[in-house]
Structures are given as structure tokens and as C-alpha cells.
Amino acid sequence: MGRSNRPRRSKPREVEAEDLNLAVVRMGIRRSEIKRDIDYTTQTSIGANAENGKTWVCPHCHLEIAKGLSHIVAWDTVRGVETRRHFHSACWKSFQGPLL
Image (cartoon, rainbow, N blue to C red):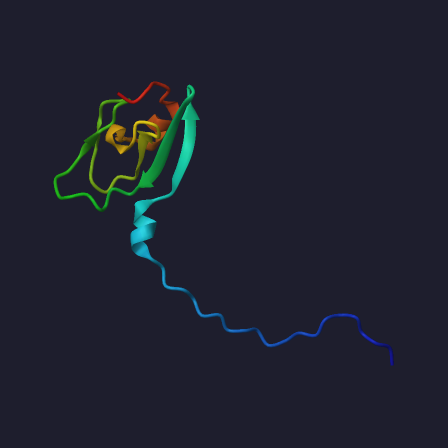
């Protein structure tokens, strides 16, 4: 009888799932973007951590971003988080000006 070169199946190991840190998930994904030679740090936000009654005004379309609405938080990397602004996701994609 010939020898088989196929690997033998072993019993699957049971891998224990790590606990999901919801605080980190709610903070969103942080990344860097360059628009018109300005380096921005952006972070997604689900807006669920905001205080009751808190809203933001998008600097691109000047419409309100309500609590619980997913959006983008962006700030100038050089000047720091003092320049932080909240944008609708679509507005951030089309935004090209500097953060004032």
C-alpha cells in the first residue's frame, strides 16, 4: 500500500476568544490624512458617548450633527486637538480647506 503525503487532520484546538473592549471600539479608528499639504489626524466617532443634548455643527455644510450620528472628528496634527472639528462623513471627504 502506498504512502499518503497529505497532512493528517488533527483535532481543532479550542481557542479562547478575547474579550472585546467596547471603549476602544467606540473611540473609532484613528488615522492620518493629508489635504492641501496639511496633515490631519482623523478619527471616526459614533457619537454615542456625547452628553445628553450635545450637538456639533459641521464646518463644511453648517448643519447639526446630533448625538448618536456616526461622523468624523478631524484636527490639524501640527496645531493639536484645539483645532478639532466634527464633520459629517461625506462632508469630510469633500472638505479641502484649512481648519479654522
